[in-house]
Length: 281
Ligand code: NAP
Image (tube, rainbow, N blue to C red; front, side, top):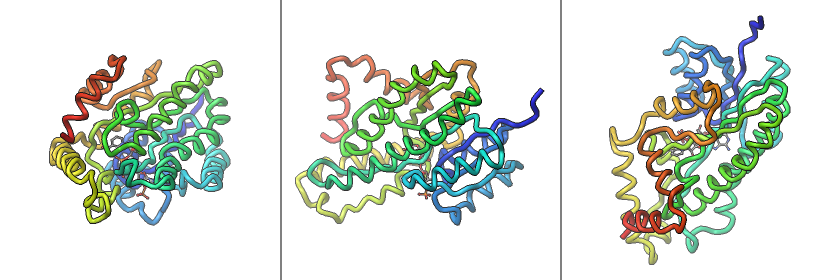
């Protein structure tokens, strides 16, 4: 019987869902490689691990830097000899619309949320094949439902979902399962990290009224107690890691399931259009 613990690598563990997933996996007995793009920002992670009485292997990994990704994955194999699961969690929101975003703005959003996932998944897959492992990616309900002023973010998350949905049957032939985890609103640093600048052109432009309504609605969604806790969202990651046969698509809450369900049954797109139009009308 093997005594080597299963090893999971998680990206973006400085805060939020990644931090909670790191602690939860370690508590569940995984050897957890908790990665951050900036390891000087690991204080909250270290505190959470200490509070939970678990040990983490904390390493540097910037998902947009292919060399950093390769070094982290190679280091895990050199030190632990195996990789059983990857949780692509790192990501960043972005608010904007076609006339206010430059194409470079959109490329930046794609770099983190889409190409970053590919960088990590490509580096990890040979090792996941060796263990019959699991590739789990935190997308969003915005990976299924397009949302106003989230054009670039949703495009990136749709891209991840399309990629992973296509990849899943391919890797399955070799014993690697692929899942996406779809959160709705989760109380993390996500909204703060977007860094909304209402003083920018957008606020003064033709979209200012609709944007204000979008922000008011979003503020309400993330208000105390309305958003899910990171620990609750991380339970869906645990399901993807532990279920005998994990579903491809796992929502983190009943609300997320119902919202995604609206889209998946909306063959002509009218239900989503009617719904999201009310957010900004
Ligand atoms: P968060 O607290 O802002 O955490 C995001 C994490 O990603 C941070 O650790 C951040 O690191 C990291 N990150 C950003 N760019 C990175 C890069 N280039 N390389 C490595 N790490 C990077 O937000 P969160 O809510 O936990 O987000 C986790 C995931 O959930 C994301 O994929 C997000 O899109 C998704 N999600 C969140 C929500 C929500 O409501 N919170 C809803 C749907 C989906 P730094 O500290 O260095 O910035």
